[in-house]
Image (cartoon, rainbow, N blue to C red; front, side):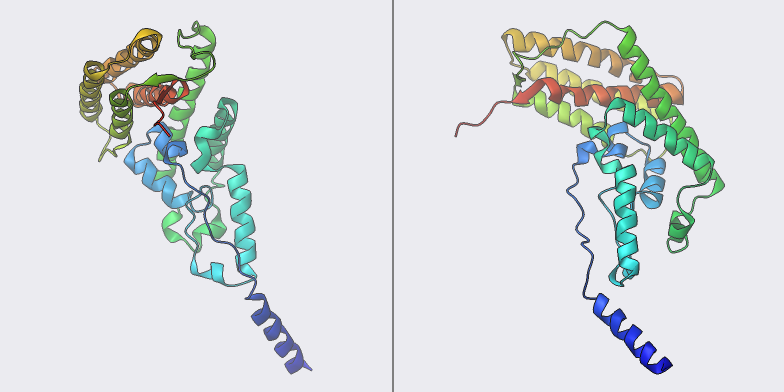
Length: 276
């Protein structure tokens, strides 16, 4: 009898192996990624990618046991739920209030040692956080949260920007201007080997060089040119702040502010369409 039960269970186990999970990751848009959007330091980036991104992003690397049912089914459900709760790959699609909520939850989960899950670190030892790593992430998430809260307060207090659309459409920008904006985003996206004020100042100088190149090559005219002025003058001020920052908190927050302003460009400007 026991032998028959064993054979039946084995047969069921073999049959369910034919029901594979879909391990295709959704498309990743770099500009929407959390770590890219906030310009996270290299050390923070590596920790978050190692400990969080397998479940909370569109860059899941499935382990060997994802090929074995029914464990694979449980794993797929867990990843789907994790992405629904917080998908770092889609950060820039979140509304500001949701970003604030998720940053607060990240701090709470880390402080209460609820993340990463023990069930995950058992099979992924490198994802387990040391006390120093956990403290680093808590402090960094708190700083980032403070920046977003400060940005929300500033948006409520400051008068609205003079930037506007062209009757609901984006203004046409010349290729050199678009390249300049993208080059500045790429400069900020470059990882730093360590967080030092002198490196942030040097980055500010790089950005200013690129900014001056952008201005010198701009050939826009009319109202589009005026709107570009409304956009780039605040950008120049932010870059100058980075070039003169004197403490790490100011450097971090200023760089985040610059990156946010650079991403604002695509809301008001676009390249000229190619003739069909």
